[in-house]
Length: 66
Image (cartoon, rainbow, N blue to C red; front, side):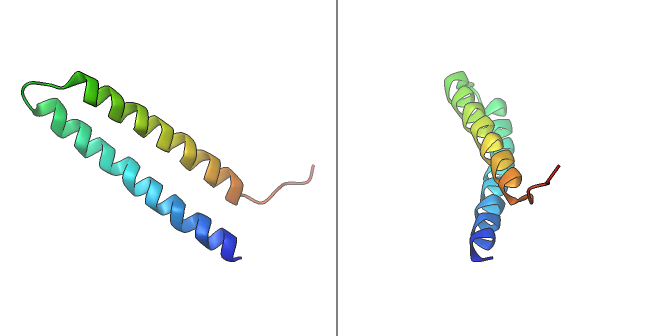
């Protein structure tokens, strides 16, 4: 059970960071001059976070015996 609790805490932190990326990217898109390289890096990080979130959510689901 402790393992699941730790995983849920990490998952919540990753989801928060993923949401924060949206506001950071939006703010950078409105700033002049636009730093496209930094925006591209942030988008890659956001995509990596999404992948980690999906893996953790999958790990939390109980195995279904077919």
